[in-house]
Length: 411
Ligand SMILES: Cc1ncc(COP(=O)(O)O)c(C=O)c1O
Image (tube, rainbow, N blue to C red; front, side, top):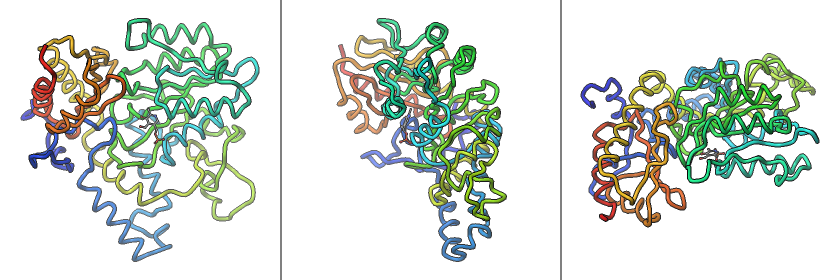
């Protein structure tokens, strides 16, 4: 499989952490922080050099003028998430963007004040939605609706999500779900959630932290009102990298939507006339607040170039095989000591497998790390691994499985 892999050459473009024996680790943690592309250094050097040589003139006269730098990146990300460039902006970080989106799209009234979220959503999202509910004078006890799996099940059923929306939708102001649950690795059916939500008059937004650059997305066609994601996981933009935001085209000219404004969201053509009143740019860029941290964007530029070259379709095809291979190898040696909780259907998962490890705790993950396999642990019992198609190989998956069974205690 590795010999026939059209994407195999991209592996050499990344720096891998080293294990104790000096060999490259089997890095299966791209769902948390993607590896560093080697090309990041020259991308950063370019900005450093031009800052030194041009100083303020770099805004307009750098080889990639800083004033438009973020737009170069948004144009590369848009096709990865199935969006139009007008709908895509690179700015801030994920939770900040969720708040900015909620400022516009969570407008609770006494009849319609609830936010629907999945139970066990990423904590930052839970804190964000609860704080928004309180900010508007409501109580999370009454205004937060959480979706839970059926008793004895780990994942939500798509039909259960839609039936909660059908049942409770009249009082739901906003549906805000992960595109892919960070603990279980389950991919949600974003098209039907959006459809069901809009049918009931709810606003719909998604946290795509674990979806962007991982699974196919068609945001424009599916039609959610907004989405936000981070660029440091599958998109390899570096720790704390600037995030991204999608606002559907139907809101592109909704200048009257309430929002928290700043000068970078002001009509670009007149921004430097410094007028006192805010005129938002059309599209997602109208939600920008501040000018962009170019040094933090330079690594993302390097990384996105690799992504565009590899192509999302080819990446997804390899990802489906890699994940299936990992699942196949684990299922060859069943044991009561572990269970894969990620759904088995390829369309309901991405690169990630979440494995429930019984009676071991975090030390299981630590032992694998010592043996050179980097996954991560989510309390109380989930070991997560992500064979990432851009830089992992089928041999990595094989070696991971061998090490997994060496570390897993025998019956
Ligand atoms: C699903 C999800 N949402 C939100 C966040 C928070 O991201 P940030 O620190 O960029 O706001 C993360 C971070 O890993 C995440 O995985």
